[in-house]
Length: 365
Image 1 (cartoon, one colour):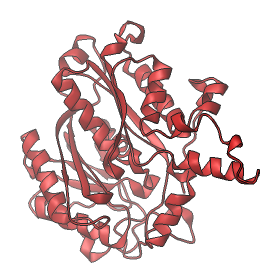
Image 2 (cartoon, one colour; image 1 turned 45 degrees about the horizontal axis):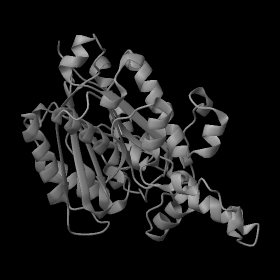
Image 3 (tube, helix red, strand yellow; image 1 turned 120 degrees about the vertical axis):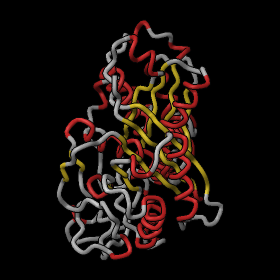
């Protein structure tokens, strides 16, 4: 289990933290920090033209489990049940709390897309900007999953929860001895604008969204479908007008489940083959665990610095590479210095067969 650490009271009052949820608090913190980093004149931004799109794997379980525990101490008398429970557990809570904190009156809602949700927040925001529904978007993903008993029990029942004598090595995608997921929490939100608007105000542009795609396996509740995953990647490349050899970093979704990693490697192998010498492949979950709905957004953030320093972070904890996960360009255990990073492809897949691929490119003035 990996827990995020932040000062909730930096952007909220004590009562707001007490009444709200941890997912809402993480979202508010990330949104405020993103806005500050963007240097936008926030007070002058028309709040009805701002959209908030936050991906989330699940919401409400933490609050419900806590309430059940609390009333268990009073013989389950529901008069002790919090009257804040309903607004805490509605699916749009993280985005709703953020809109309340920021005074945003434009569309604010949560996107449920399992573990593809972080990517989906960015993809949906892109679509809304292109449609002209908003002029400024706050988007990404958030997760408070480590605080619910149910998610641990669920993965344990599936034999998908990682174990290791050394907790720092428990998350080990592609290793032959991998045995499951390390559940973690966190959030990553971005400010997204149309390129011309960002340029007009002289914003620092970390990257441009070049392409994306979302599809569904329609084949199993849990087991991934490499054919559909490969189709998702190919469609994102087509939208971006790029060939596989044009991608410099592939951030894999791999969660360190025995079959899931093999299936994704099969999909990547089908798309990138053996003829992409400039393509490096890595995994961020080996560092931070699986942040569920926040995973895609956080993992993208972990790779964006490569545009500046030309260093590809590795997949760590790989002591014995699984031959079925051996891919050309796989970066293992040590960072890799490269000559060029102009594109990053970010995969995020989820239960019930939802797949998402997001491609970003270096901004060139």
